[in-house]
Image 1 (tube, rainbow, N blue to C red):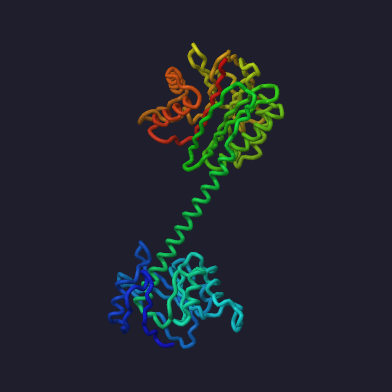
Image 2: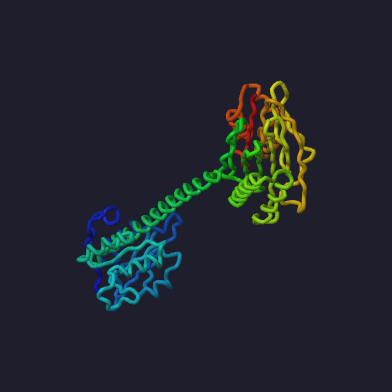
Length: 434
């Protein structure tokens, strides 16, 4: 096969300007040295894989140098089988002769004209591909780009400058296309995850109850809607309002999924009539069956508020005690002395139910430890339960209630921490007014 006679066609960026004929080592070689790219930011030279069946054995690729004077490495494969062996991770670009027969297609007049290109694209989905064809086959060349090649070159228009620039263009375009595709896939995946997580967030079932419900939720994981914290509230046919809050140890997606399972299980068990020790014992069985590691546990706080709203039963499974605020009285934590172990720690554990008097008007706040474990200032001191109680007392005295109170509490804890909290935060507030 004769050495190609250069005659460049006009296309953007890659082949702009008129190519000139020159022997190896002359102006052509100097131009190739100036325009050929190094293999990305690392400075490693490019490697080109030429897939071309040349019976005459004459090279169609002139000598190419990168910008530093190093030769662009060229590997030659006479068929796709050889190409598969030579296609390693250090290959940046493939120059494919479209006249090459695809596997099982030799002599088949009805064969797909681009079958060999499609085969290479499947073989090398992460590599840039340049299609090589005759100058009279422009339609086929354009179709090659539509199928997936980064660009096409005409055999009788090929020279060192054109080829080096085409390689650079193809490699960068492939990188850009890959990055854009990954970005689009990431955005789509994030949207799907957000829709899924939003569907898993609880919708309290409190129809018929006079209690007001408010909640605030902030996952510790970046760009997530769900963490290992979970909460829920339902009203059973007898008029009792049941509320719960819990925290699975850990912050990853597995813990978030387990939190959702525990919340759904709690709702089903509560609507089925279980409460107190029976409910938590069954919930522990669910956790033990669903957790991915035997070290994983969950803390839970449950309250069941009597139909008249003046008293409640409280069960604590390794969880911080709720805060009770009543008009004319100082806000305080409910008793903690009968706290049972966290779920998943002790087989056969029991969780005593404490009876609590609430009164005619009150606010009951359930929370996870993310609200109290944030740091205070630049030191290592934590806010703690005492600091949280003082903060809520002050905010109540300022007239904050409901959603406004929870919003202010979470915001202040974040500000005291000096930035975003690393732990999940969930807060639930139930209010009763005469």
